[in-house]
Image (cartoon, rainbow, N blue to C red; front, side):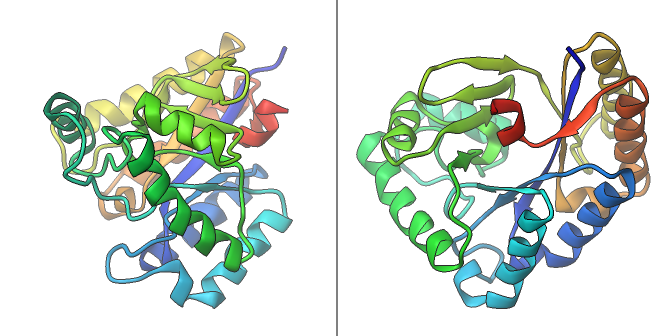
Length: 241
């Protein structure tokens, strides 16, 4: 079976419109679809509900083959859940792990307005990637009960209905962080090596990557290397199918 390549664009919101458009144009240059991770709630001074033109852009992207996924509600970790889970989430996701420590009712309370906005904007979806790739077991149960079919974490894609997993580590940049250049080189090496082995390559693109010299080029080389090694560009929904 051919290797699969999923390129996901994170933090898709009115506040990151230009960055999202850049990453989408880059994906188009390779002829591959992307999975767009949409933040529907208030974030960085804006909300999807107040940006119908941006929603139209996302609907057009879906019409040409991209996948729309929900990416939390407001992309900010609440002061809920156990201290241990909150501490781990803060360390791993820098305060963005919104669903990492939630109980069932708290998760449902955040999903309801998020789903409402997505539906009103014509962007309903059954795919969900939690901010920071972290969701508590209770949050995953809430997702399944709300009708979501699939989610992702750092280590792969999960069918919420059957529990089946497709293993593949998410390769992403950490702009400005320790080891930025090493991480960029690792992304290039791992994407090509995984593709050559017929594995599942996941490359995650963030708007802030575009603020650092060289990170966009490293990401594009990673995509090019995976495709050259035989990977087929897909969305998470297509891998599920």
